[in-house]
Length: 557
Ligand code: NOJ
Image 1: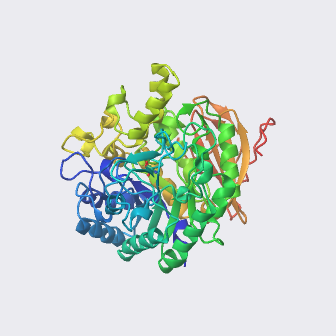
Image 2: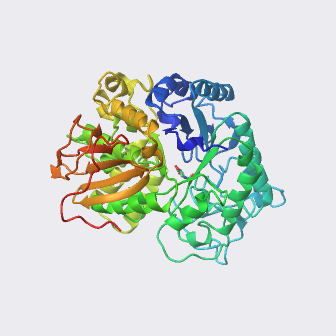
Image 3: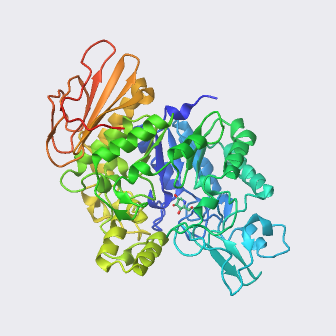
């Protein structure tokens, strides 16, 4: 089957914050339908929909109580079918979020499994406690604390790597695998174009022995990228995915390059692409919460490792779990627009399938939270509790949470300068960023030099250009805030130069300007603050190949 997803740009929708049509403060499927033309005009050919299934919302829909129905707050199955067909009419495929490591504790399977004699008992991981009323092992979860919850009804504990309302399924039970296959067929038969697979490399728990010491996710060595997970992924492909024209992208927890290669090697027949985290943790100590200084040189090293190490990358800078990229790697103050465009330049000149997260295309920023009570995300509260237990002072704690909270990306999309940012006429489920009067879709639509229009240009540039899609990645130069790399296919070569700093810089090179975030049409080697430029050597011989000039080129391994 053709690998059509290599040609496409994916747009991620986090439904509850996208567009609300019934003024209950929560986005809905009719709201998505009403914005399909905007998504098409951006140039995206795929929408990845974060969960819209029935859910009690302990983790905003990533706790599913029925995989075959739509939660009433988002609409009906008829709305969903309408979305699939309306999207199709515009050449857009819908990709569903497949959350199968765990269900909600309100799922019928779990409710039945609480009875020790039920055939569903073995759908989940139930164990007796250790003597002295202790949980079965010492593992800690992704939302902190023990992974075991005691259930009085059956006198045993069940395993949950995330919230206690998200019990983990037991993938040693083949019946579970068969159930998942049926759920996948159900959606593929409705015409969806594939799945984004939630935390897919941790579904299989090889053993339940105690884990080695680490603060969060102690025990991970017993369930990360186990042979059992690889086997199940192969089976899902063989029995289900191979029979449909679709793709999968798997979120892979704490995955390294070798692990990602195994998961996405076409020969092995597991996933088509992998979401990894390295490139967003250049300025983080251990995962997302503890910051350190951003270094562009380090970013180029990480990009090089993944660009050259994997045949095909899932390219993303934002999603519903990450802070806004312009606040993270850019400058969300004076140079907001320019740095947002720089980041777009990078996204669309790397090799892989680019993903845009809702609001990224207008340069939305992190939320202006002033206190914890404004947040809704369960993870932020648990992390706060955890770091408090290490006696981290309140001010530092708040600073970490404020900059890294997942709610930064979950505030409503800013459609217009009207009250509620054009997202809702009601009370939004999470605050609207006060900057919506300045940063909104409508204002940018009408302005040729807006971030939105730059995204459209970059999507179109990539779409029309095989070198930007399929060319080899070659790192060229990295010093202070400036990085440069090129993409090469046959005789054609494009060079991207990015100045990740608020200071002017130099990086000499010649060639016709193919893209510029400051609207230049020629390049003389001097870079403005946060400037991004793409130079081309074209097949017809116009232009020259860019070569990094400064003698003190930092080596990129
Ligand atoms: C990853 C999802 O992206 C995140 O939002 C969720 O909390 C966890 N998986 C658990 O499903």
